Length: 139
Image (cartoon, rainbow, N blue to C red):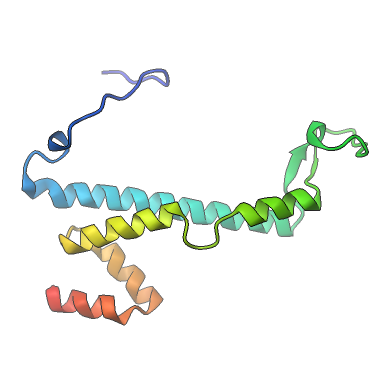
């Protein structure tokens, strides 16, 4: 079946994703890696937005600026007030992406899915001795 931007994916029943219990670790690994990727992209985006704001490199269309701004270009540096509003709206550390990744990571670790090594690597980096000690006992 050819996919186009206008076509909608068809929903599949859960049994079609994992027709037998042996494939559950592979499914958990795929979901874990995808959620980890999305969380990392979100973190990189936040970091880039903050760096651009600090460097005065966030631009806005001039037509969105108040009339007192007389700028003969299509884009201009964002006013300080707008940058501050944006910065307040950016999640700090725990956002939905990282929360979802943590939940999937716990499932992957519980079932010893191949991706559980991601969870162990993160625990080592954070210095989470409880998680690494539990892993050594189980593994």
